[in-house]
Image (cartoon, rainbow, N blue to C red):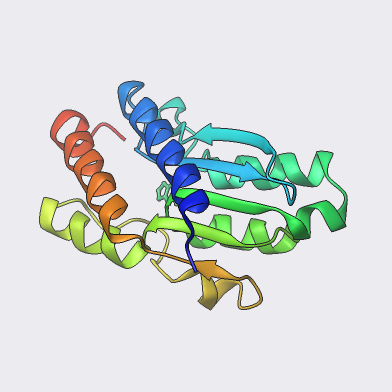
Length: 163
Ligand SMILES: Nc1nc2[nH]cnc2c(=O)[nH]1
């Protein structure tokens, strides 16, 4: 179940996604929250650097591996504006992080991208659970997914073909 508290963190992910867009990066933002509710990390997509692995979920998984015990990782939640891609779902599971809550799904992103005429990504679009079946996953959250959709529209209107 997605609670009001979860929605608060997802709104922060939306703000981070909007910051990414302002910097010319793809509009994705994520927050890592410990089992006690402490925000441990935040990041947004940084692929405009030229490194297309610079997804926030991947960066947070690597931070967690370096700074958290296995027990702390298992108790943590990763919030994200868009469902993890297969690379990030794999990193999340290899590192042993806990629950994932996302605002918009990969299936939604694929259909929005098709509508916008965005070329297929080089990595297949799959649900997190096809990659990491042991991870508890919740989403999408319809009212927030619409906001994420608007960010993707803005990104493609501004930066079409830039990445
Ligand atoms: N979830 C997620 N999906 C992506 N697809 C392309 N970039 C990203 C990203 O940073 N996060």
